[in-house]
Amino acid sequence: MAKAGAKSGGSGNKGLKRKAATEEPQEAAVAEDGTTESGVQPSKAAAFPPGFSVSEIKNKQRRHLMFTRWKQQQRKEKLAAKKKLKKEREALGDKAPPKPIPKTIDNQRVYDETTVDPNDEEVAYDEATDEFASYFNRQTSPKILITTSDRPHGRTVRLCEQLSTVIPNSHVYYRRGLALKKIIPQCISRDFTDLIVINEDRKIPNGLILSHLPNGPTAHFKMSSVRLRKEIKRRGKDPTEHIPEIILNNFTTRLGHSVGRMFASLFPHNPQFIGRQVATFHNQRDYIFFRFHRYIFKSEKKVGIQELGPRFTLKLRSLQKGTFDSKYGEYEWVHKPREMDTSRRKFHL
Image (cartoon, rainbow, N blue to C red; front, side, top):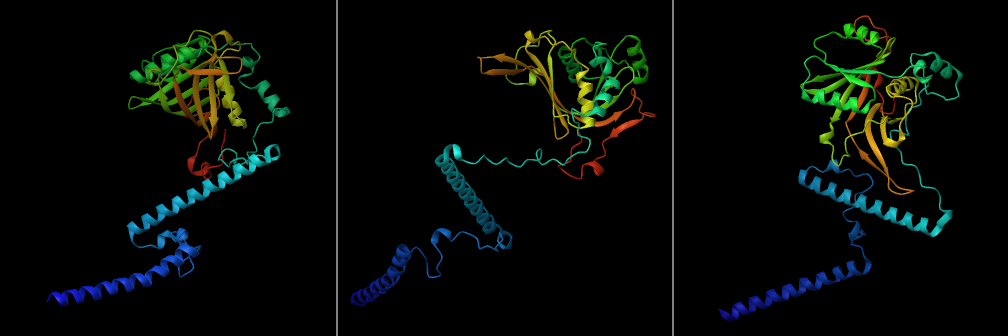
């Protein structure tokens, strides 16, 4: 029995040797030529054929694995192309071509016929005769009334109080159940130039009405992303009583021009630069971002900024002629999402 076992073991070893001998040339062929019998390189074995789609794989786990490999391969190719382009630019030096401008929704914006030209005589005439002409001619100084919706909660009240420290010569009054149609005549009789109403829903500020007095216009905004001063990280000290500078960015159309002039008329003409405070209304894709900063000169070339708060985002819902009148008011512009939001590259401000 031992001899039989030895013989059988020996024959098994011979079989293994023969199998290894037959496999060695194949491995050597792959190592030397870099290709398999089918002519495909092992490094590209995981690559997909030109007309192949991952969605054709029925097995979910296999499909996920192949998709992950495909994403890794795409990332490697993109990184290699980026490194190659960087080396070429370094080799060319000053003769290197300018970097291509990346495509964004902003620079691919659909052209609007109402875009304002600073040299347009019609625009200049409209500005000289509109409701804000007396402010820009420095005949009137702004005086603002800030109020809320009925029975405001703490967050809305604090936002009004903080806004009053941002906007000079502004006064906060509580609503006490009065209708806006009764508040507006009282504001006009007391020489207020603007009325700001902050609305809330479920204890969160969600709307802002800005009415220019005495002849309008009135704008209704949706308010979102409200952050009070205590909620802003690394904020600066509370603002001083200095009159801030104002920055209006990217209000390019006739409608945007009107909205920008409404915001500008809230602040006096003579900013006190010693306070180093700036109020910014930045329009991007029809969203108006409000920020309040203090800038600090670190050196002759470097300037640092501190956000003071509050901050919030506005989106225009309607622009109405005259003062607030929800029933009989004549609207210049109303946002209609189904008709106006058909293209992501179409903006109105």
